[in-house]
Image 1 (cartoon, rainbow, N blue to C red):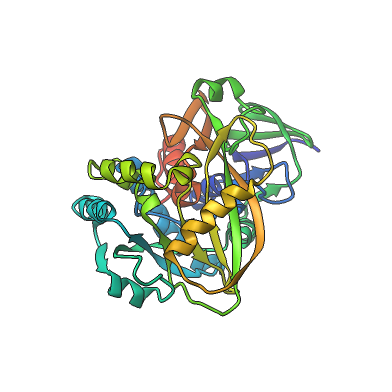
Image 2: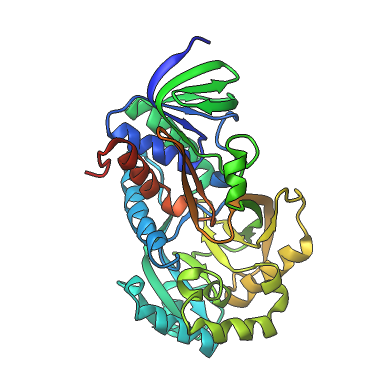
Length: 380
């Protein structure tokens, strides 16, 4: 094809790429998004669709999540993306977990959150297992969308309403701003933002290697209860209090981590913590596990799935259910940072979320990147 000229070219149509496209479009810029697949097919559509604020790492990550949650609420209304439920219930069944909840509520991140008694928690979420959950942290900040439907709809809305051009099924071979070499021919743009997800080999591989980026593999399941249940919000458990850094880096979490290492060593070794969310058809998305490798194998270990389900069944009683779907998710991971914004050239940005929280933080990152490039605030 002949070269086309844009203000901003975004490589990658996952949530991070789409967030940058939105920020650029809100500034009135001409935007093209280029992706090698026919639609987003990576981490952005293989997750919970759970926009998480509470429990994100203190500081930059938590702040980005707070802002992104607000943008999600705006975009969901405008693009007619259903918000399936709001809020988060982090259950506790050990005194050490209750101590972490109390410590968290004493931080800035605990604003608007509450500690609930077991009976109060069950009023919010009837399927909580009796005589197991002793208390819970309630957060009003979270929202949940069905990611495999929401991300394509977001792309359609950006095209329909904001005039963003999409080049699907188009591979990018190289970036030398203002030129992007693609399988359809050259694309010209004043600035290029590369959002490669967990692809560390195609573009700027040497720079990504310098950050120690690898990949994380997740086991995910969909359960369909045979008798309908209503969750009402996302549900997590003690394991999350020792893994999500907003909790886990509190001094009070050390005792919980030691007890979990003793009592649930298999879950801990496999990086398992419980997230349960509900879909519009009543089914439940449940996960997950974490295994790290530059090239994770594509196979699910049913023993790992069983460990996830053991935690689910300990916390929630939904009666008999069927496992109706399982899949593997992957995301980019780095050992010492939750995100990367690199500047290979003055008009080029390389943006990767490396902590599995792209859906929760991407909109705010996109605003930051566009402000850095243009000097104009997309949120203004």
